[in-house]
Image (cartoon, rainbow, N blue to C red; front, side, top):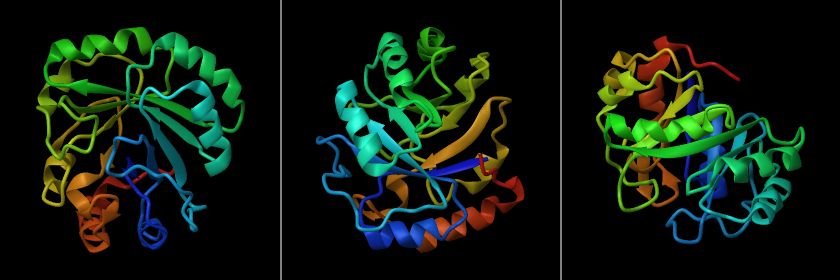
Length: 212
């Protein structure tokens, strides 16, 4: 299972988190987010894949961040269309390993959103439908994902916290690729509680995280 810690910004906090057994580390490039990265941190990990999160950014803006931050993965968390992604992908060349499309989920009907993107993205990220884009700290009903019959793997997101290890271990789906950890592990926006993350990951250890 891929473990993604998102919403990172502080260089020393990034350094501490990157020493944990995680595979992806995410930075948010959206000015309306309290976790927005406006300045390149003085430390960025080399062990983990770097994920850049964008919300309705222009393709030029995305490519600029890909180059500046040496991003490995692009996560699109806005209303980006399949055509947008099809334009973006060839510009990335070999620099970007994967493109993720985040979708907001509340009911099984929301899974219909996946269909236009099925052969366009490498992963979906299923987040909680809310007024704010991500980082809301609330869960949706994971049982609705039993209705997801697609072949594109997904990252489970939305309000996963320190007390949810057993719930994560009990959740099974053939396309579950990993989980996204953010606001419920924070002491302040963009600053993660390293001890809480370490304890949580220790509880998940039997899942044997992958290193894709």
